[in-house]
Image 1 (cartoon, rainbow, N blue to C red):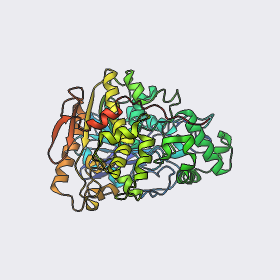
Image 2: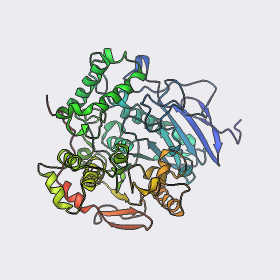
Image 3: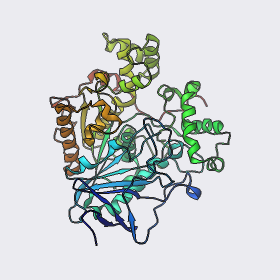
Image 4: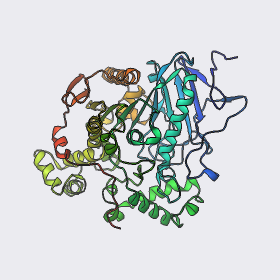
Length: 501
C-alpha cells in the first residue's frame, strides 16, 4: 500500500520507494546500469539487474571518481556511479507530463547529479518531470583505449535515456516528450547525443547551453592516453589500465592538466585551457563532430534550443588568477593560438580596435571555447533542415561584487531556480534580487514550454538570426555578437588533431 509520504513506483527492474518534498514525489539514486567495475571496468554500460521487494530511493548515488575540485565531495560511498534521480509532480502513468533529462557539466572531469544547484524541484513544479544523472568522467569516461569502447561517458548517457524510455511513464511522464538539456560539458554531451546513431529516437528536443568546441580526434585522444599511462607507470593497454584503481585515475588527469603546456607542440589548443579529456570522434560511437552531423541532417527531427552567455570566459579568468591583470603577452598568445586563420590575431585587433588586452583575451577565449561553437550548432541545424532557437544571456551577475558579468555557469541557477543553494548561487548574490527572481522565472518558463511543445516563446533562429536576449528587459534581436560571428564564419569546428605524429 502506497502512503502519501512515501510514493512507490514500479519500474522494469522492481519497485522503488521515494519521498515527498514540497508537493513533489522524489526518487534518488536509481541505478540505470550495473556498476562499471570489476569485469565491466572500462566497458560499455550494462543494463542493471532487477531486485525483489521494495528498494528505497531516497539518497543520491555516489558520484563517479573525480578530483576534489569546484566543491565536489562524495554524497555517498561505493561504486554504484551510474544512477539517476527523478522529481515528478504526479507519479501517475496517466499524467503524461513532459520530461527534462539533465546532463551535468564540469569539463568532462568533474560533476555529479547530487549537487544542490541541480535539485529539480523548482523546475518540476512548473509541470514537468525532471531527471538528473551521473555518467563516467575523465579517463574513466573518455580516455581512448585500444580494445575498449570510446566515449564511455556518452554511452552511459544513452543508457540513462534508454532507462527513461522504458520506465518514465510510471513516474507520470510521456516517453514521447523527452528533452535532454545540459550546460558546458553537459551541453557538449547534448551536442554529441544529437550526432550519435545510438541516441536516435531517445529524445525529441534538446537544450544545449554553452557548448564547448573541443572534440578530439582518435590520434589526439590516444596520445593523451599514452601520457596518462606513462604517469601511472603502466602500458597504455586495456589489460594494464583496467588494473589501475578507479580512485587513482582522477589524480592522473590533474597531473597531466598541471603540466599540459609541455605537450603544446603535440596537442595544440587544448593545452591553453587546459582540457585533457573530451568526446572523441571515433567513427563508431561518435561518427562525426556535432556540427558536421547536424549539417548532414542527423538531428533534423529534433528541435534545438541553444545559446551562450555574453562573458563566457570571465569566470575562468578569475579562477586562473588573471582577472584584471592580463598582460599583452598573454593576450597575444591567446589570439595566436585560438583565433581562426593564419591572420586571426590581426583580424581580431582590427575588428575590435578599442579593446584592451584583457578584453581581447576574454573575447577570443570565449569565442573559441563556447560562443562560436554554440552559434555554429544553430547554423548546422538549419543547414541540415532542422529547427533551432538561439539565446544569449547578457544579465550581469550581481554576486562577487559584480566583477564577472554574464559569465559561464550563470545560467545554471537561473534555469533550475536554485538561487540560494550550490556554488553557482554565489553569482546571484545574497539575497537574490527581484530582478534575478524574475529572470529565473522567464528562463524556466521558456525551457519548460520548449520541453512541453517545442516552442520557447520567440521566433526560430532562421528568422533573421533571431536571438532571445535574457536580461532585465526581455528583447529579441538579430544575433548581437556580429563582429565575432563574422570573424568565425568560415571556421570549421573539426575534431582537434594530434599536431606531431
